[in-house]
Every structure is written in structure tokens, then in C-alpha cells.
Length: 379
Image 1 (tube, rainbow, N blue to C red):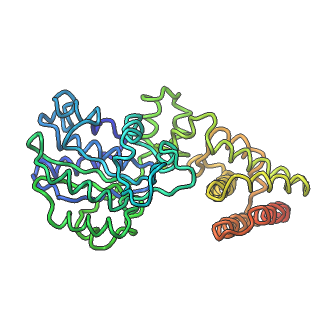
Image 2 (spheres, rainbow, N blue to C red; image 1 turned 180 degrees about the horizontal axis):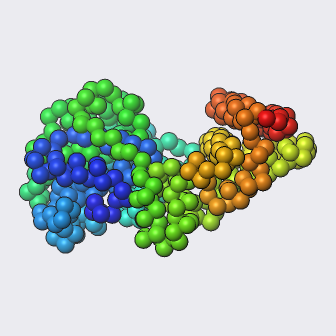
Image 3 (cartoon, helix red, strand yellow; image 1 turned 135 degrees about the horizontal axis):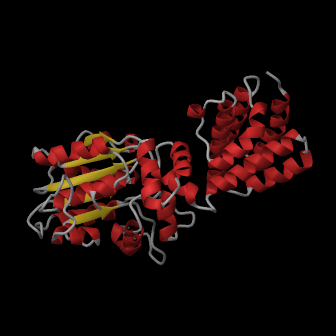
């Protein structure tokens, strides 16, 4: 992974190069930013840059033995730490560590550094388990980092989602960061840094990674995915600064397409006041599972906003895909200043109630029937 492989983030790349050129690389860093902005990609690219011995044009050379080992995720001085589940067949005495799922991690990372926790859980076969970083991981890192650098340079630890460390692991990691082995660099990739203990945060230099520029996403879609310019522009705007979101839109069976179909069905049934069919719709949506229901409702909220803004006929205000805009052409007038706040409140309340373990069928049916009243309101 090289800096040139990272989508956008030119300012962050410049800052990281400057740290190396001025010989002031901190021993602990936190890359913080929203999902899909490329934090992990930057972390791996920076690790490659630190380990490379022959920089070229402000990037890793990609040709030296160090780069070859890093590219294959086999560099002995590059260590990855990440949340894991308890492996099947192990008891409570087993101390979970990244070694339990090393091959699955290599496979996932080799397919690209842009991925989500859901992707990682699926790769581990997690079912309903939660992934954590336990004390077994801190013990493993302590053993690895106590050894001398095999290549005589940096030792780099890329820790993905350190906020998932339990208390025992976090306390041991704190001690390791307080007295780090020579030329050891910790790169922590965080999505919720506020969940890290204060003492760890205070010992790491925070670098905030912004959302990816629309222009960078658009260019990457055209050059790397072969998308035509108009589709790339639409996808880049709808992605909201997330390369992951842009990639999801390219998937014919992606979740958002399912959510769009659910939204279209809900609005049509509500407009025609088909109560029995709305009850069936609620039962179908309730079968999705609570986390997916909340993602669906968040998507509905975005579409309510986009349909409202579509009425102003200003392309700069709308962030819709071609399929979303196709529905909005006829539906948008029904989302207006008389009901946009009311509909948003209905969906926010449904998200809250579902998050508090209310009966999803009742919550969603209540929302659906109230949308009937909202759609009647005229500006």
C-alpha cells in the first residue's frame, strides 16, 4: 500500500511525509475520522513509508525488499492488532488475540484497506458475537515488541479500532506506550476515540482525517472502476465523503438499493392509504433485525431531506443517485415545508424506540400510519 493508493487525503499525506522528513515521528498516533474516509488505508501506507528504505517522489518506492514484504503483509516489523471474537471450540481460559484470526485478517486486508466492522465480523464468522481487543492482545504485542527490529529500522504497530480494548488490555497497552521499545511507532485507527481511556489519548498525537473530497472520489471511480463521468459525479455526491459508500452504490445487491425499494413502497402505500398492506410492510421491515432497521430509518431520513431539497430545482443542493432522483421527480412535491419536520420527527422517534428495544412491528406500523397523515398536509 502506497500513499498514491489512498483516495484523496492529500493534506494528511503531506503532514505525514513532513513528520518523516523532519525526523519527528511520534511514538504513538491516532488517526481519527468517519467510516470510509480512508484511515486504515493511510495507516498502512504510512507504515509502508516508514519501513521503506528508498523513498521515491514522496512515496514508498514499491520495489525494495521492505516494500515487497509490506505489500504481502509479511514484513516482520509490521504488526497488526484488531478486535476478534472467541474462536469456536475454546473455553474462557483462552486469551483471545489477533493470532486467532491472522489468516482471515490477511485475506480481508489484501482485498483492500477500505472495509467495515460488519465485513470483518463476516470474515470471522461471528454470528451474534461482539469483537473485542482483550488482554491476550496486549501480552502478544509485548512479546513481539520486546524483540529487536529484524530489519534494523522501525517497528510499526497498526491497531484498528483500539476503542474496543477492554480495561485490562488498555491498562497494559498504556504501560507499553509510556515506555515504548526504541523506534517503535503505534498507529491507532479510531472511529470513536472518545471511548479510549484518557491516559492513552494523552500519550498519542491525534490526526483528524477528513471526509474524502468529492472530486477525489469522482476521479477514483472513473480511473479505478471505469465508471462514466456522469454516474461518477452522482455517486461521488451521494457518497458523502465515504469511499466505502461509493463502492456500495456499485454493488447491484447493496443494502441501500433494498432500503430505496422499502422507502418507495412505504410512501406509495401511505399515499394510497392501504392500511393492510402497510401492516405487511411493517412486518417485513421488522424482520430485518434492529441494527439494519436503524440503518434503514437513517437512510429514510436522508431521502426525506433530499426530496425536500429537490423542490428547489438546484442540483448543487441534492445528493441523490440516479435511481433516487428518478423516484423524486414525481414524489418530491409531497415532501414540503408543511410536513418535512413532522416526517423527520416520526423517523427519528422510530429510530429511538427501536434502539430502546421496543417492539419493531408496533413502532414501524405506527410510523407508517402517521406518514399517511403527513402526506396529506399541503404547504
